[in-house]
Image (cartoon, rainbow, N blue to C red; front, side, top):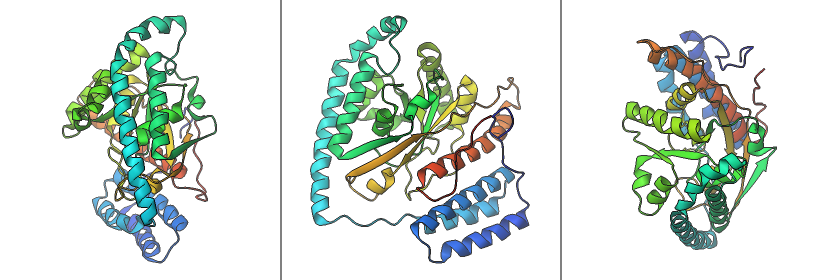
Length: 356
């Protein structure tokens, strides 16, 4: 971090030979027997090396690291027969609560018309009528699923002095939006950026559109960025709302962050000059890995990390896109390390860096 708090690379990219030497040592450590905690530490090293290799354009090192990653996949125990029966029951109950909640929110959508009237009276985002209903629904869905959310520290209250920003989180389960909404509580009620296909789901998709969530077509990156810039600009500038999006772009399949991060998050933050608000979710993958029908019963820990300043504004020019990408690479690398240190459990010896 520089003196003004900007995200920058920790050091210049290593020469290829040095990177290959480090890669060889990492490969030996990964292939040797190791505990789950040691595996988490090894992934931190792999992520740091991958960030440096990406910044340096070392395709050979990147390919080798991507081949190593599957060997660090988190190994989880299989649920018992009784646990599976209970899982099916909770899944059915959660579906009922979810569908009921979607229909109720659709019914109460006209309450959005009261929001512009209540804001001048001092009612903040998060305590507006539909925000309160959404929060209650999120609590009910998680309760039906058997998931408890524990917020460490101040939670989203840590960002109380920031009117709005881009909330980023590690995407580990299909319950993440509910977890995030509960973790934010009454401090802010973000709008979510999600895959366009989800908005085509009957009832759920209709409700999402009615509540102002933002669909994007990830098959067309340019169109996705344009949509985010246009729709999110209105949400932030007009209503001072935060927007939540996963920089990974998809749900993790091995319990670790999906790398590299999508750069659209940083385009959005730079375009709006809005800070990045990182939220680390720990334990969601263990409860609901992609290979499992539904989530297990347990507790998920959420921690709000220190807000990160946006990339500096750039004047429009033919070099704008390329320069922004160069700036986004170290920002993505630093954010990845920040989230990894808060989502991979205890004993990593990593701390969240702070701005000065």
